[in-house]
Image 1 (cartoon, rainbow, N blue to C red):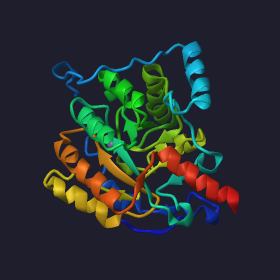
Image 2: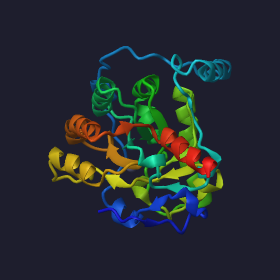
Image 3: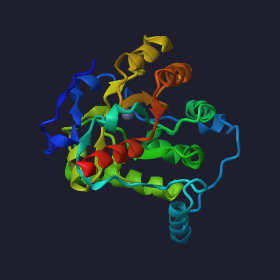
Length: 296
Ligand SMILES: [Zn+2]
């Protein structure tokens, strides 16, 4: 399902070695939700106490500053991207020495039940992932959002409504900035990572995001977990089949019933680890690529 070819549209510097995948081919498997989000927070109980995140500017500044002094003690709240990737579209990176690093990206939450289940699995396996959130879902599930951040995962913006349709500049701006504002207000996170719903790059959203120096984060392989008929084992196969150093893997924690993704996740992690892969967040992946560019 993946097509690997040099990127000639978004990255003018060949040495970046960012590889393009045909978005059209992949978008059919991404982000199946279209009819709005109907989270059911009322029926859900968080299994563990969630650390609340202070939202005042003073506290945030304090936390961000202290993070830089003690990165192991305070969670990272800043997911801005290196200059190399600002305004660019990224499908994967090429790690130095072909190091086996891989990033799991998880879209369409935060979502009752399945996000929590995936957080538990990620924690048990000491894996950090990157969650691309829908504004409406954050609004419905703020405590889950706080837990994702508290557990050290990276956060990206996946618009407010998860629309695919073409939109004018004001709408595109609203879809992205309204979501970023709520991410910040809810969790204290600032992010410059943007993923267009469905991987659609020509409806105005990606153009706006690039104009504001977001990095448009696509993926190089998909679990195809929005396929309503496939069994969870197929998601595992899909990921393992195309795993490469520097890959960004697409899966979903929300936007529908993601029970099968939850079922597939432990085996995806275990088998990739068996192959020697180390899991990193998308920002970490970009930093790895950045170090190559700087050394050339
Ligand atoms: Zn999506």
